[in-house]
Image 1 (cartoon, protein in one colour):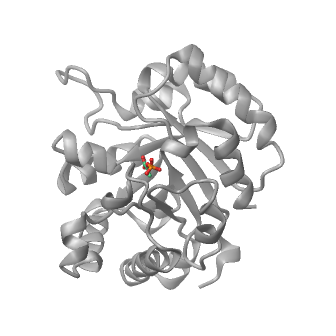
Image 2: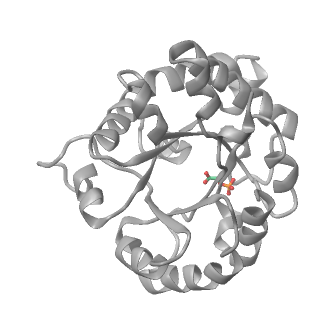
Image 3: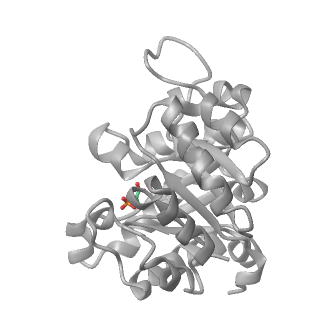
Length: 254
Ligand code: PEP
């Protein structure tokens, strides 16, 4: 697989942390530390922090993501935010299918598919999260699980739209636990996903697709994970909330 066809994408998932002012402050801290990075840098912030984040990141190499999106454009969906609303704010990226959404908020493969579709329709780029839980890994069905999650999420996504989909392989047992997949384990699953994309789309589309690893990536383990042939970046939770640590990860990606 030709890694030179893909620019790494390092995304921080700031989850339900920080007020608008704190978000702007963290971006201000981060900016000088990562200004010479070649990779794409994204931070996913709470909805309420998006305007402050966009303003703080202006003129920098940091792009802003939302952490979720609803599949309908408008209507009686109290508490939800639609893709055209995000687009109107100027948000280019959205995270869809994060395991915390699946675990705590009843997200299913089918609702993930609907959200992916809505985000792409609105012109957003999706960071699509897939990954197995520990019991599935122990049963030896990781490949089947991540293939099924990905295939369902991409149902109806055309080859030219795949350029606006980043896949984040995030083993659920490694998220927020301090337990990281080994570089070999992480690469193996990213390669399985690339193989799936080659089957659904084409080898060329698969070679160009950005596939991240996420799950307790930090300043100490990032370089080894990011050096793997099928890992094109990271989705980072905890370690992305400290500017210095996140900058080490960004700079490890080149
Ligand atoms: C995440 O939130 O996607 C994540 C990978 O979190 P952490 O890095 O804290 O495991």
